[in-house]
Each structure stands twice: as C-alpha cells, then as structure tokens.
Amino acid sequence: MGEENVESLHLIATQHDLRLVALAALICALASFTAVNLLHHVGRSESEMRRIWLAVAAVATGFGIWATHFIAMLAFQPAVPSGYNIALTIMSLLAAIALTGTGLTISTSPRVPHGRWIGGAIVGAASR
Image (cartoon, rainbow, N blue to C red; front, side):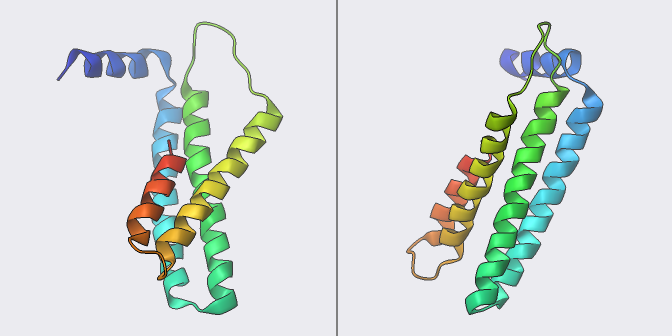
C-alpha cells in the first residue's frame, strides 16, 4: 500500500465520524440500486411515461449522489469551525440533479452514437 493511501486511511480514521462515513456508503449503494431499477422502467416505457420515469430517475439519482457527498462532508470533523451556505447547498443539489438528468437522457437515447458511454461519463462527472 502506497504512502498516500496510508495517509488517506489515517485521515479518515482520525478526522471523520465513521458512523457517518458508513451511512454515506449505504446511501451510495441504495442510490445506485435505485438508479439502475428506475432506468429499467425508462427502457420499458414510451413517450410521456418515458420522460416521467427519466425525470424520476434523474431526481432520485441526483439526490442520492448529493446526499452521499453531503453526509460524507458532515462526517469530516476539521480542527477549525465550518458551516454551510443554504443557497449554495441547494444549488449543489440542483446541479447534481441537472447533470445526472443530462447524463441519463443521453445514455438512454437511441439517437446518440455511443450514448451510454457519453451519458455514463456525464453521470460520473456529476458524482465527483
């Protein structure tokens, strides 16, 4: 194991509430499972219902990504006081939903060449 990995593990163990880290991991797993299941509905639907399922998938997946990151940030306990700006926090949630929705739309579109790859890259970028 590299020195950088050991340092990262030490940081997680000493400056994070490990219960919240575990909760973030659980939320991430549930959000991923939910996204896949909702995308199955998108694939089986047509016209208006397809758009509705796609919107539901985008909101659920965006919330899951956002919640995972937010809980992980809450788990971090720095030595200095910190806080959150409610407007920026809401904007970050909306950005996660919008980017995820864009990626899911592209990935499920039969008209976009290599749409699954492009959409997956966008959803991956949204989760960063």
